[in-house]
Length: 247
Image (cartoon, rainbow, N blue to C red):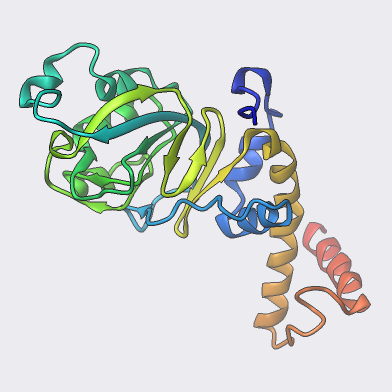
């Protein structure tokens, strides 16, 4: 089977990123499930900061394989073409740097200095299914950082950076360059790029309806017939609620 169409051939609606910034990973998970995408949630990855802002952006990928003594001496970082360093310096503004560490968090995939450089360059966020060193500093950044856990050992002890801009696996999920990542307090969802526009548009009404439902439940309403709206009166109430909200 062929790979998905490349990001260069799939231009996003200018409103897509804005809509997704108002969406939740829970809503996106449901919308992807309806389309048959049951494995789009990156496993084992959470924000380092509990106060992290919602992260949205296209994936810029970096893949690690296991290290060997001949390929990963401590002076490997002196190499100007070291893929990890190149990825940090070339990840586009507004993109999300996604790192495939084979779900091995026993060593870091990056630290606060490199992540600070990403923030300064305008990167939208970083996702790693490995560890992050200097995690307190990374968590204090304005840029959201999602990882498996803090991990002090340098990546050279476990992770050899090899590929940039190729399909990867992160937390057990296929990530193709240009796929749209959405991250919040529940974790990170991967939205196939060709579905991003329609998913984003659907989240607008979905988030609004769930706000209505929460308002009704807070007021004492039963969820029966309300969520999902199997009672015909529910949608009438919803339309009235929207009208009053917009008045």
